[in-house]
Length: 326
Image (tube, one colour):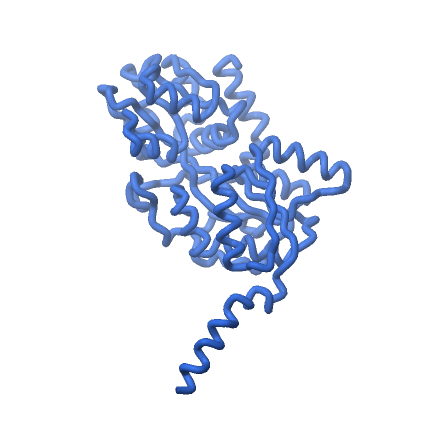
């Protein structure tokens, strides 16, 4: 009888848990997530922390950085938390002493190298880059080296690292992991590969049959195939590069407790399951992959050093421009 009386009381206390912790107030998120994903992320967080009022500004990562830079210059940064495309950008902000470390963040479930070892930024997803091909293509690639074969000559399109952050990370990962380094891109150029535009343009050309092969982020062709498009996606045997859509707290945050709670939620298993629902590969190793993807153990992610990629950014862009004449 006593238990029946206590249980309703405990249930009534649950919604007040966040408030009891003192986690409340305003929180401003700057993000490059699509609007729908950003709103879903905020709604899920607020379900857990209803006393936090979250607003967000959404734009592409370069425009978010330009906005932040202007605010830093004026001495009036508005954002508390950043959730943007890639770890190299976060490394730049870390180098400029713009980020606040979250030293108590629990990352014990993750493999080493997933997050910043000093806990200034944390991966929330693994958006990998692999190979797409049109279903009518006679040759089915399984390796990055296959894109240099005669069967692919003049039929490959890919984003340019000069305009796409994911493509720049991809170039750094490939040249750092494939034997021969930048010689691989020279071989692609010799095979009449076309570089330019973004992932959306690659998808349009390969699905439409203007080109038979493309280098592209995973979710675009996988989702289009599910809708009936004549396109296939391959995770090459050597491995794939990945952007991790990291989250970080700005050093100038006006609400560090809520900012830490936001980060904790995103890297928790519950928060990572939201990434799955949105159709992405969650960074958390215990979360399964969306429909249309192979099992997690069949996807090899290439090693990648974000700090080194930041240091090499100018040189890598120059090397690509020299090869492709851009």
